[in-house]
Length: 167
Image (tube, rainbow, N blue to C red; front, side):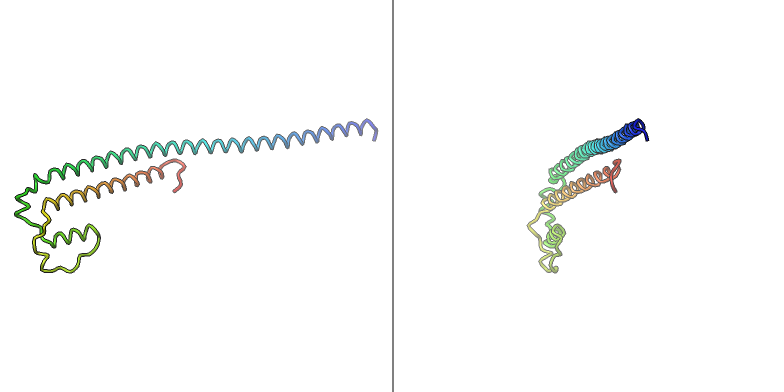
């Protein structure tokens, strides 16, 4: 081979190596940019999801607080009205038996009352108006808990309905 051909072949080989190096560098840069773009898109989607979840949370919490406030206020009004419906003369005329108090207390604590006895028929010192007040307060608490559970269910349903949420 002539010197000129060897020189041209050497230049072509050098150019080929340079081109291969440029292609490899370009592929590396493209992969790096693709990776950073995918990461940025994932971060954006996560931020949008977090923002939408936060909006849902604020809405659900606001509704929950409003519903509980209504239940609480209604319970207080009912308790204030007890003397209208269960008057002191009613308290005197209809004493609650000890058995009623025992059953009520057992139901409130979830513990079975002891065996019934003769004293269960005797009048207790708990008046009907006091029992009505306790019962109204207990129902108010139950209704507040119901609203709390409904809010939790609303939150779970909203999360499940959100795009990208996992089941």
